[in-house]
Length: 247
Image (cartoon, rainbow, N blue to C red; front, side):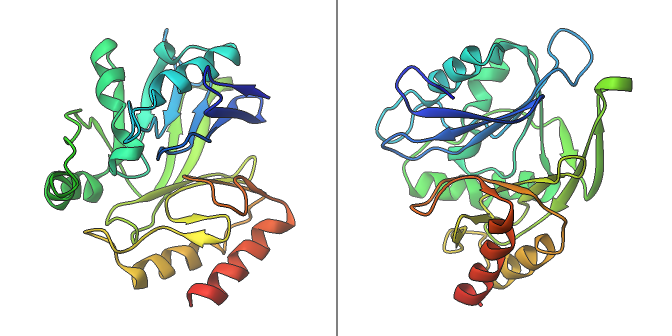
């Protein structure tokens, strides 16, 4: 187990080329995932949800992630693609800093990009925060996203899962039966729907879709008091509990 310089980011490797970085700071930030050595070229890594640069408590979230990745033997400067599950600032603010330093492709769904520049901007203004200025260069669509070539090839199933935000996506890795959910669901809980663009009925439908997948591991966008990564028999139990408590 590795940790960031301030013990805020805890590394949990799930496979040879998938590392998860769980946020345990005092303020808000998301969990991140890193697929390593997938892409061609000198920036072969894929980062999912880099999170805040600095959060509301001025914790240096990006540097914490940078150090945790470094301890695992990789460099955040070698990321060639960022995938955002959605556009809330605690998942995508660091896009700005990372994409200014090196040319990085940034991906999210088209409906989420549209939300980001309308209700999302107004929501950030309401909370007194500046909206990130990064440019989205790849729109995610429902279906298989094939990345890399030959032996390095990674195929992820993109699922458009609205409810927490209009264009949230979840990423399913069939080979390892891993589901990365963003803020659609957590350990014993679900994403908030009281923000602009949220809709509880849509979120319930999205969660029901996810529950039909063959899953061994769920990596949520945030931790709860019940836990962080959901594995094995707890996957089914978690879906059952969520459907019971949230209808």
